[in-house]
Image (cartoon, rainbow, N blue to C red; front, side):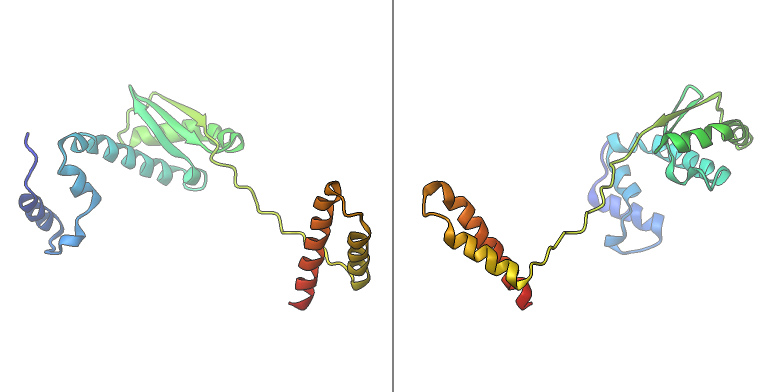
Length: 171
């Protein structure tokens, strides 16, 4: 099977969509243009239909779940947490029966907990404010330190802290 020319592809896309717009080419049409990718489309369509049916059968629970695999009449579902897996496990007989009624030959359903990336909440930045007398005391401390090489990092840190707090007070 040869790859269609771009003009043939555009004509076919126009026929499918009823549109003459070249920019309205869908992802499915694009994948159909490639032989290797086109061979995956029936599987993708099947998985999408199964996902849709599962979501229709269990609308409250299945929103965060996904169909991972469906081979040899065995369905594998991805679940984002163990708690949701426990809830879903109780409804598996009903899900299986409903899928059978819809024409899916499901003999077993397995759950696989796959925790997504943990969202780390950004901690609010701590901004300590120093009083005027505290800033004066830090300036005096910085000036009272001996001018020795081992005191230089401390003196620089004190200067930076005083400057930063003075700038905040002026804001």
